[in-house]
Length: 137
Image (cartoon, rainbow, N blue to C red):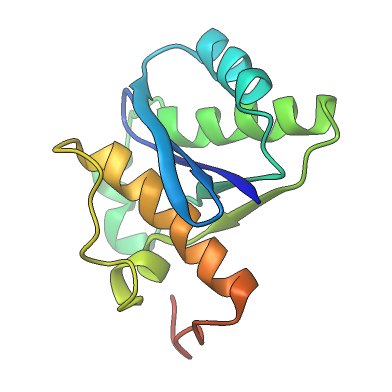
């Protein structure tokens, strides 16, 4: 199974392609055009991305923000719909609490590592090797 994971950030988006549970390619993008090229070239079975929530405690800090991560999620979802690719999101807490993925790394880049963790957490979920935490908010 080919799982393409994404971690949208404030100005860059990390990504990692997982094939049968192993990372084969990863990197970081700064333009949306490259998102489409990457998704097309990776030929994923599913695309998994870190979701975004604006919590009241963080709302003031986001005031005036262009919300790049949210906009990037929309672009990823749109590209997936254009190509009839399954798309799902996971909260950041999923990879922080999952003992099977929280300490894994593919590089020194935070967004690349988080994209890998999201893809790997989803792979473990499909394989039934992980029970999600009860409180993931």
